[in-house]
Structure formats: C-alpha cells, structure tokens
Amino acid sequence: MRKIFLAAMFALIVSVQSFCSAATIESAKFNGNETLIYPVVHVANPTVEKKINGKIEEEISSFIKQLQYAAQYDNRKVLDARTSYEIGCNEAGGTVILSFIIIKSQYFEGAAHPGTWKHTLNFNTASGELMGMDYLTEVGEGVSPNEFKSRIERKLREKTEREKLFLFEDALPLKNLPENFYWDENLHVHFIFQHYEVAPYAAGIIDVDIDA
Image: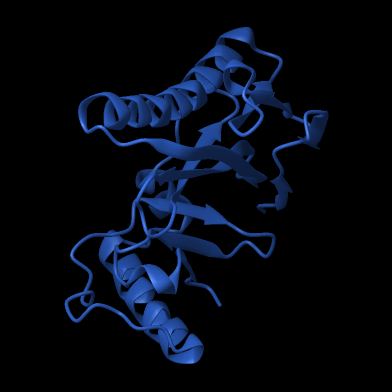
C-alpha cells in the first residue's frame, strides 16, 4: 500500500510543514536570496537528516555554480535566477519516501526566454539514500526498464496527440528512459521530459503519466 501527498511550495512560504509522520520540511533561502528557495528536511535520525539535506544543497549549489561559470567565463549576464520545489510523501512496503521536484529557472541577457528544468530527488527516510530506477522497477512488481520504456512511449504519443504537441522527428523511439520520475496522489508514475528533450520549447516541460 503506497500513499503520496503532493503540495506546491512557493517562494515566500518559509513555515515548517508536516507531510508525513517521518519528516517535516522547512523552506529556506539560499544565502538569504528571496528567489532561491529550497527544502530543509527534519527527521528523527540526525545522520539521515544530514545526508538528505546534503544532497539537496548539492543540487542547489550546482545550479548556482553553473550560473557563476556562465557569468564569469561565458560573459553572460544573469537577469534572473530562481528555484522552488514540490514535495510528496510516499510509503511503499513500510518504507517512507520523500519525493522532491526541484524547479530551477535562469534568464540570461539576450535570451529569447528563461530556461527552466525540473529535477526529482526521491529519498528513503530510513537511510537517507536516493531512490532511483532500481527502486521503481522493484516496487513495480518486476516491471523491466524496457517495459517502462514502451509504456512511456505509448503515453507520450497519446499526450502529444491529445494536446496537439509537436515532437521532434527523432524523439521516438526513445533512446533512453527519462532520468526524472515521481508518483502522484493516485499512485500513478510520472516521467518528466525537459525543454528540448523530445519537443521544441513551446511544448513546455512534458509530464507523462504512464498509468493514466
């Protein structure tokens, strides 16, 4: 039995929120910056807490370093940079998992539009370890990566036809599985395609529910 509860965390919300019995989450500002918001996790085990928060901080720090590199070495002026997140609490077979969607956006001078990405981080709250595709196939009762790939391709076709989205000519068949996935409140598995991954920018970040 798995349960997941999703809630958007906006930039100005800094209060502690409880989403499951295993953890509470607090919004923090990176170096006091109002637009760079990230989650801070509190769990009973301080070692696990440190491990989870360390991975989240690495994610935000990496984004900031990329901006600094672009400004310093590529002479690109950053007009805007921001992060936010969404969070879910997922229970599977007695294991409580925290799922984060980290949303990162950057806008350089001269660019036609901002660049935005969504990156998922799924944590085992008992160990602090990241849960990747191996975990997904395990709780999927032996569903193989190839089976996931076929389901994603089918649902991606259905979504693009339904929403009249244009895919790149070589988008299908998929060369690789998308790196980012999460569960929604109905226990459906979603895979995320970033801008330009399979479609032009106008298509947006594509979220494919393979259980719909």
